[in-house]
Length: 421
Image 1 (cartoon, rainbow, N blue to C red):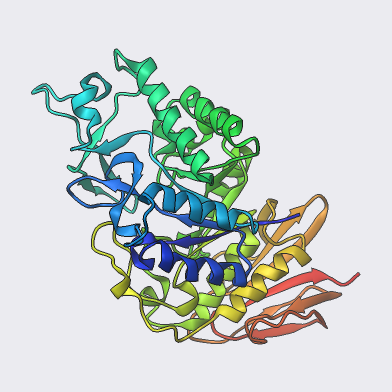
Image 2 (cartoon, one colour):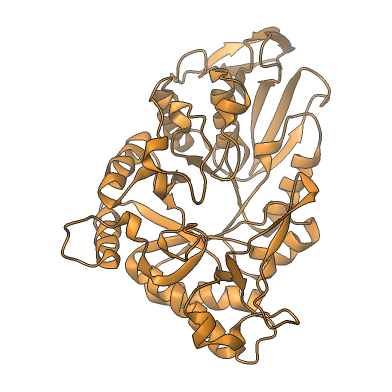
């Protein structure tokens, strides 16, 4: 059974369609079977990839100059060529907003929420880590998906967009603002995608930063996965374990060591390669799917930006932890505990410098021992009659060996543990 291993190509960082080719081949070589490409459709005047003006036209930045085909035909050919080799693609799906200068505002004014002045409503949102910091996206207009007097045609239009993108060759979607969209609309789009593709289409809900009550309500929408917040867990409080219990009751979850919206981990840790290893292997172990942003394997430090990022922001490919990433991805098929949903519990106090976690799936248990200290070695007691695997110290080589007693962990080391049967 194939696990869900997602490689995120940030399109403006990669370049045009021809330049994406290298990154797709690289991702496949690393063992990823899904490619997530952020929004690629024609933007409005702000030039943000998330301010889409025309969802039926490719962003001109990604077109290959000199090609006689239209941009959208180039994209379709690209997606379908790689699909034939078993690679599946997903992209962003935003049913809540479009560009403030999108033609739809003139053609269908009743589709949009309005201020008392008659101006379109701009979406806004607080920073999950600092609720007092509120961002207003004045390059976006918000659809009135609940109260529009022409709601039926608005919903049909959004369904048509999904149908068109599936027809191009997309097999999955990162569903933005998932909790703000009515469940019946999500179900309609999911059903339309299934009919169009004649095959399952992956819908992944992004509800990061939303209340647990809102996330719980997603159960009726039909999502296949949810993003979890383990990226921000410092292994020192139980909130991530509690969230994981709730999320997996709604849908299986996706972990990531960083994403296109977060600071780069290598920058945040001030260039600690050991933490790059730690957080990737932890993401493999914690949930049923994982996602990695391009450049993580090369320890890149510049964050992705919806407007300013260009291929010139690519950094040197050193340090290179690709062999470790490849080995982890390969191991997800060999050890059932990896990239599977299960009950996760802490077996040691969260305040200690090391943390022992347990995950149980259908009666099978696997454990994870983490040195939370990034700069100092720490010791921890092993259970009797166990085997351990230390892929970080072995530079990605996976082998199990019997162990007992106290174990010294290198700074930020992460160790896999299973009972010796």
